[in-house]
Structures are given as structure tokens and as C-alpha cells.
Image 1 (cartoon, protein in one colour):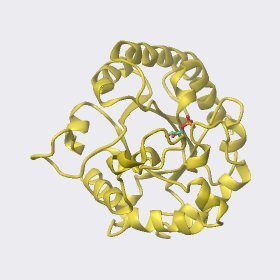
Image 2 (tube, protein in one colour):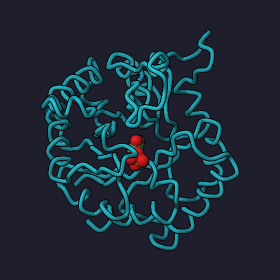
Image 3 (cartoon, rainbow, N blue to C red):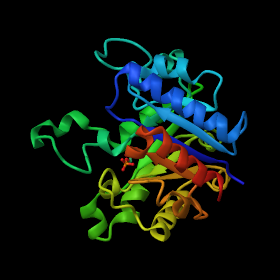
Image 4 (tube, rainbow, N blue to C red):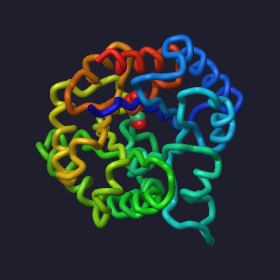
Length: 266
Ligand code: 13P
């Protein structure tokens, strides 16, 4: 039985005080509901600058803190980047890799076309980042998902297959066991258009088939894209869906708590 894992991705939101305050609120809610043990693993990924504050605020709770990106080099002349060991050093547990908003595939494209190269994550850079993170104690959360035109062209499974093959190339099956994958259809992110639970379950099954047989049954696969208190239970009760990567709803501790409870009750 895979333990459900629910992680909030706060994206580019909240200053440090507010981040710390909301972690404190969530800590209280979790404590009141679950005490010191919970059958759901819980994480929050604030901005890099709020990592230390969030780690402090989460002490003594069941909340693990994560970063939203990482660079694959250990150190050196890489202005503006952070290595896995720096994120580890900040006290983090998780790190997101290959989020669609870093692959230049914003759900709501609000940036000029000419700036898209800035978000130029590829399957190859995802692979480099995954390998670097697996050399640390961090738990990688690797994001994959098709965009709307790929879905409409009937290309979903091919895109997922390519993203998965690229991400895990040359990674040992034994290392993969601690990786979490997050299926996030780009068209469902921040749009309120959640993927139908049966279809989300089917694609999570496709993701699972891309994994080596020896670890296929132990690896957790989350769904992400407009997860809310209203739809979480339906999604998490699907057999291939092992929890959620939650954007907007994770910013409100009460809503995020309801999503956690939904994962716990299925
Ligand atoms: P929303 O839950 O806001 O759609 O965001 C999903 C997401 O991108 C999480 O990484």
C-alpha cells in the first residue's frame, strides 16, 4: 500500500512572514486533526527565500518543506542558481523538478513569446536535475504533463512517454524508488478545469507503465491541476493516484487541510 503524499506548491507567492504564519496555521490544523501521526505525507514548497522561515515554522510538525527548482551542478560560476546541497542545507526535504511553469508551458501564457527561453527546462535538464538530486538526501518530485494542443491532437500518452523516458534515463531502478512523480496536465493548472478523475487515473497508469517493473508498484504518482477540497476525494480515491501536487488551494491552510483529509479518508 503506497502512502498518499500531498504537497503544496506555493509558486511565486507570499513574503517570509506570511509564509511562516501560514505554515504555523497548517501545523496547528494538522496537530488538531492527526496528532503526531498521519497516514498522509505532507509537504509545502514555498519560494527559495522563504525556505528557512518555513523550515523553522514547521519544526515539530508533520510538514516537510520543499524547494521549487534546483540546478544540477554542485557549485561554481552559475549566477542565480542553487544546488541540491544548498537546498538540503536549508533544511528542505523535497524539491520539484520539471514543473511545466519551468518548461515554458504556462497554463495561462502571460509572458511575451521572446521570454519563453528563460523557462527552458527540457527532458534532458530534468534528467540532469533528477540525477543530481538523487545524489543528495532530498526527495525529488518530477512533474510531467501534456498541454492542451497535445491533448487535443491525441498525443497525451506519447508526450508522457517521452517526458518519462527522458527524465529517468540512466537512473537506477533502486534510486527511482524514492522519487515521486506528479502528473500535471498543463491545461488543468490554475484554470479550475480539473482533469476528469477516470482520465487522470488512466494517465497516472501510463506514467506507472514507464517505470521499471521492479519498482513500479512502490513509486508514488500524484495528480496536480486545480485540485481543491471539492474534487480531492474523488481524485485520490482512484487506484493509480497516490496524492496531489496542489497550487492555489495550498495557499489557504484550511483548504489545504481539507485536501489532506480527503487523502486520508480514501
Ligand atoms: P493549481 O492547483 O493552482 O492548478 O496548480 C497546480 C500546480 O501547478 C501544482 O504544481
